[in-house]
Length: 151
Image (cartoon, rainbow, N blue to C red; front, side, top):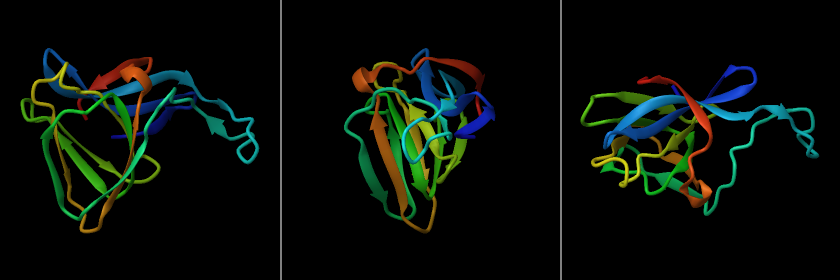
């Protein structure tokens, strides 16, 4: 479960969010539909806006890295370019595995103001894991609908 075009017109994405002070894993459909790109070099390709982001970071994690329990520092898109992430919710036992590559985009939105404990992220790959984090400007959640809860 991660990024998928399960609807031909909208981007469906895994989200780590929170309800009642506890992190949860959900599947969201972003409200911004795919359209035909018009920019040179991508003209005619499918394009979905992720909205305004800022201060993106490129991160290389060592093999078998354990991120431990933590909250998302801000509402952000996370693109797993290579490797694998196993995200779990301590209070509920929910978990999801996200593999790097074309389906490696997810949203981390369980910030400390909405989740007491947060989530645990482990990177079990024997190779370095490469991640790009893209905080969403002003911490504003993208418009979305919840398709389902849990992996």
